[in-house]
Image (cartoon, rainbow, N blue to C red):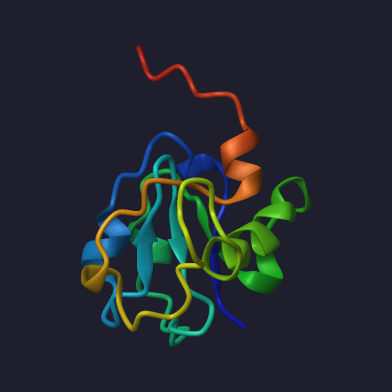
Length: 116
């Protein structure tokens, strides 16, 4: 089991969770953040600091965002657009920095209007 970042993070990416993560398992895509399912130690430190309440324990992801569980895993296991190979398990987000792509569900979403 792991934590999952769902729709509220798309086009927001506050990154408070990244600062709180003790194992550096939250990776940055173009439009969303992703928690590595094999690197996450299930500590839950990320969940309460998320200002948009986008982080859920895998079993608690709301039905309306259930597709984000597989999409989160696909970010690491699939070949993302413009990338020659899967992100895989590099052992920490800081090692690779931002990834200039997103998993399929996030990539297919229309961009959120961020102008208030």
